[in-house]
Length: 97
Image (cartoon, rainbow, N blue to C red; front, side):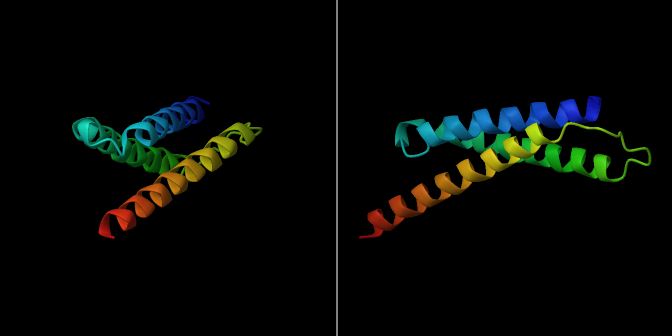
């Protein structure tokens, strides 16, 4: 269960950072903070991929792992990232005009 707990904690941090990025991404005064959050997100995503590999290669998978909560967090993160990217794309298009 330790691996699952680590995955959940990583997802929680990714979600918290995604929310912070949403608030700060379009404020030029927060460019340094946004860059730091983006670097942290990359690091957390790398960690998540590593944990996924460990889980996938576990020769003794744990039965009855409660995955519903993790699946919901993954879906939430995906939705937030999609919204952020769409918002940034619209802003960039506006600046081109």
